Image (tube, rainbow, N blue to C red; front, side):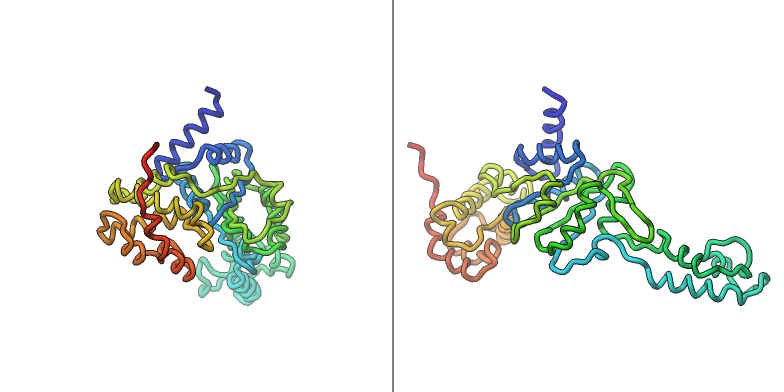
Length: 328
């Protein structure tokens, strides 16, 4: 077995150990993202495990998870950095007041204006405007947002999750290009800041809109589909061990049928893995031994978030609950 295959197998097993049951293709994509130090773009329907993968990798790799939740109108300062304006103003005020104190002023505490300015000696030193400007644009006045936090995380680096990047606008995608391509950002007052250790960067998208080709070119790509029944069964069992084997079998069969034909066309959106796990937890809380039409109707709001989907489920419940036909 090659070193690469051994590494993929090891990563697969470690993910399973923390409860994340990933298909082989996804584990391979993560391994390549780690090996090649490239961002990984994950696309798929909501609830198929994109965000959970970042959380699982943070555990497996023992790296801090840094999350940037995207939304319409997200600004660069919320993603990268902003200056602590209050501290900067206090610094400038201290610099202006410093010359009014004598070198022997006893009212100035050790941590007062002179210490704040980072200059030895008494307060008699006068800073020029240029000096004050340089002093207030130091990293101690920098508020680090997710991108900068990830870049400045020491080895082995962070796991950076840029979640639901499709919800941000196109100018924000353009802003991300420098980070995605070179793991660096430019701050006008400080210059270029490069990663201390390359973050493992995962971008997720629910495909509410197409992403720019320039973003895609800088990333490895993986599509996450709804899981096959056996993998979903393993996920539910690991996440909800309190559920009986019979109940998890019945639950995963029910959800798998919902997503397949001829039932899928009846719903606006099929339930994801997240809904399956949440449904299992709810059924355990209700002391459910086996699924029946009544309990399905009573808990339909866990599987579906649209009134039309809940209504469409009613006439189909009996068919969905039928046992598998015996093999011929």
